[in-house]
Length: 116
Length: 107
Image (cartoon, rainbow over all chains, first blue to last red; front, side):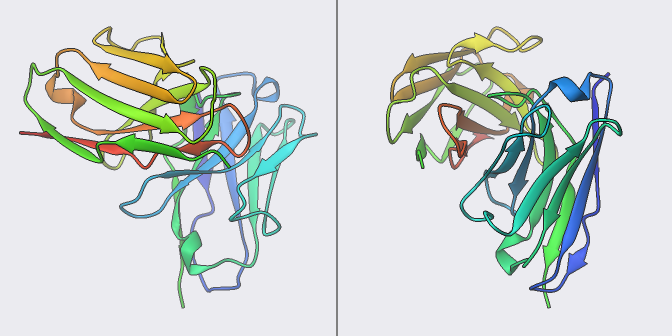
């Protein structure tokens, strides 16, 4: 069974930093593209970032480019999202997700709250 | 970036009804489109990919069509478990983008 388990979501002050992790199991993690997708409270889905299977290629939404960094450790079956210079508008549930062009599997999400 | 516009934003319907949701892309995306269902407090679920291919395990009452800029998701006979929010997503180019969502409510 495919499982994606996010962790690291907390309350952080504006301007702060945070690293999210996503532990993957039940599939060959090193063969799949991975994504982060977020959803602000009561709002729609917003794609944040993606990374290819070996980590050599990444992409970001304009709203997070230069502030967020996606990475992966295929030996540990883990995906990361380093978030710097956090803003109030980054408050959201962050989903870890797998798939190439489309998202086949999703984690349960982790809540990041940016507030003073 | 490619903008995805869904309509309607919300719709009320009854069990057994046929419902259609549309998604329009700001530029042509061939058939690089997916539809997701999301229930409150849950992660989204992939229903349709490549505009019209049904994801494994998804009931056949769900269908998708379209190409280029205009796409539709149709639920042929609504079941109680179908009341949820639905999102389209383009995968033609980065950054991938979602529509704003359509909330399907019970009439």
